[in-house]
Length: 263
Length: 372
Image (cartoon, rainbow over all chains, first blue to last red; front, side, top):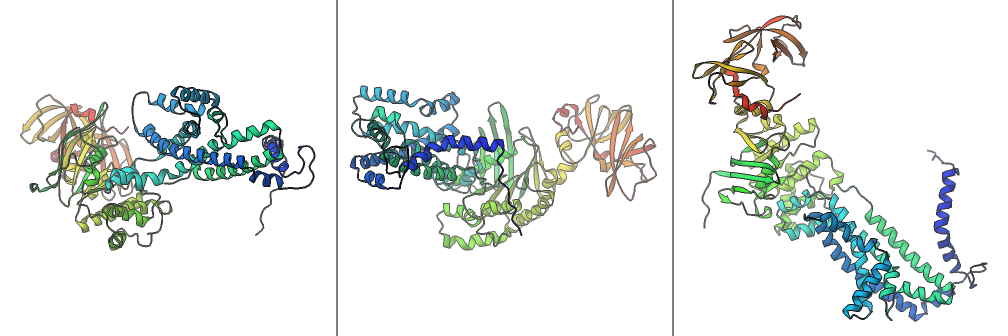
């Protein structure tokens, strides 16, 4: 059997799409390409080198910032998973006056401009007498990652018929076992998807972190600091690393949060 | 303390459930014998599913008590009651295989997979699902899902199986064959079935006894025969089977077992049921179409003149509508008996036996099912 070949034709809509995507992705491509360029300027490209990457991995301060970032993001997301998931149950299952208002307010840390949340948290920590440290950054990250997971899990819970839980109870499962064997496996993909999204957001967050950072800093803030000495190919290199990492996470997340017909 | 012996497997005493501003179940009293096939029948929203959920323990009654084998279980949660439910949407756990779904209730009782295996195999054989163990619910058909739900509910060997419209999602042919499967299972295992349905044919063909419900109220509990031939209220009469209803006034009460009702100046003789009916009361007269004879050959106590208005061929019989004044009476006539030369407009005699005609107070008209 012959496979039918579709001829690629450039329609006006196609041209528009190419332009739009070029606008979005060309700068990223430039960053990737010039991270392998031996010259320090982005004008002109000759040869291929990995020396910026080698330099990168020998930069102890940068590696420390990367580890800090991982620490903050992983811890923040772990806390957000627990708080966000239980919050989602409360939002979907509990009935109380002002539920709609509560639902909107719970998304506020996500919608609010980072600068406002950053200043607000800074004022709070200053007044409480906390030193700016990993803890202050962590709290800031928990603030905006929790709503992400809560929203993902809540929308899954909303679509999940209660009859599965009724059936489990009817078949002899205690409330704890019902949650563990029936409810949790059915919302698992939403939790994982939400956590991956929250992690990507936390990993490259800069504004809130900038306000809450003392001497202890994360990778995005560190990169921002590097920029003060000009756009070095080393910045391109680290950006490429972060970009690749984020892409992997986003692909994974899309896989987990895709709406699947599960019934 | 030992619970007192009870001859009732399931007993509801004065059970009432109120949601916000509607009474879902209104002072229900039901007694069900062990091994009985008992149906809760009624239109949607009549409270039959709520009643079932109260028996399952998934819903707590606002008033009244629930007894299982004489034991008061009103406050016992669902997972500690020896009853299992087949849900309307089956609720097959999508993340478990057919086998693991059936193992689930045994796992909850801390029975090892090794020990459970013969029981799971036996129950899967019972519902004819051998070879489907490794499939997931998305990989089996509607009828098979129904059987997975049944197997899962039966594997614990419950004393009572609750079924909430278990065949509602299936097409007609499959429904009929599954009715037989369920009835066989019930008979072979000799367990009590409490079966919720809105399908009167299903209830009549399968049940030992039926409770007919409407708007939270139980109108009648009885055998299918009693429900069909002696409906207690106009609602039951209108909900079960086909029925002619005529409005009239009580003209005379000639004897303790008959009432004469005047309908459009024609006198209709009716059976005097135990309802308190007195002279000049407004009443509803009800006659089943198959009890109405057109141009009867045998002598009937009650014959009136009418005009044929419509003749509809229905396969094995004819539905013949006869009119007198503004009243219409439908009759079902067997194909072999019907005189095919009859045409609409012909004058005919229609008749019936007074034992086949029931009267209800006119006040019951508001509860009736209206098919317009």
